[in-house]
Image (cartoon, rainbow, N blue to C red; front, side, top):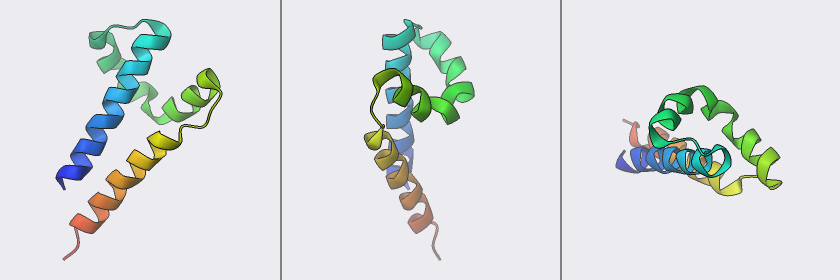
Length: 73
C-alpha cells in the first residue's frame, strides 16, 4: 500500500512542477488548482509538450495495480 501513496505523491509533484514551468503558478496556488485540473492533466501535457505522457500513465498504472493487489484477502 505505501507504493500506492508514493505513486500518488509522484504524480502530484509532476503536476505541480509543470504548473510552475508552464504557467509560472506558485506552489500554493498550484495545490488548489491541482484537484480541478488533475483529470485533464495528461491531455494538457500532450497539447503543451507535443508528446504523449507515457511516464505519467506508467506511474498511475503502478499505483492502481498496487492498490488492487494490496487489498486482496
